[in-house]
Image: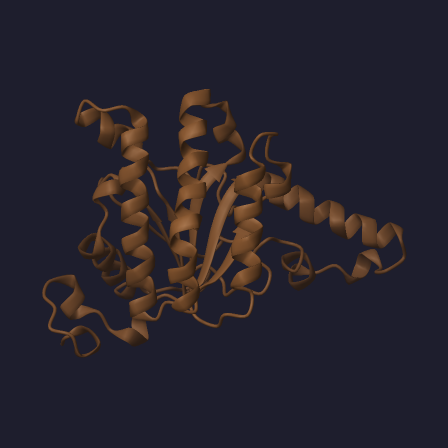
Length: 252
């Protein structure tokens, strides 16, 4: 069966639109190792990683996947060298400056997961670019592109708990009214479909503080492929593997 009428081969030829995940989350790992294998600095790998990301966003949109969440920069990543952080932030600004018009034209809606206003001083241009991207695409109805930036899953859960505690103290709600639905409404992902599939590249077997609440029943797919090499074919393989899973959500 060809994929949605296209003449494809391999995993793409076996994909069934009815079996695709609604929401895919990706931990994009391996940029540094990819660069090291080529005798290049880590920043070279991050540049290649941006190109891979561009291709995966396009393919997600073409496939009709509803939401794509990518782990761009964690709260802990500030511990990296000033040179690497500076390069990453420069790439971030370059990406939104160059790609925003195209993403908007394709009806992509951008959401930032994380505390972008809490980013260190000196990154005002990046903050402005992020806010501009969110505002410009707010009414779009296509692919929901969620970028986790200055993000941590533990921090997100604590933030949600504090927000609800403040509402209880103010009398807005009673403590006995708090349930899973209300708690989820305080998360950065409020209003998004549940994550169906988590993809992690480079073979690492950990969540790295990513979407700790939202991944409760997601299917995991780990590949040894380093992120800059994770193209359409590799993505199709992950989607096909997901389609073959029997999701039980705690049942038998």
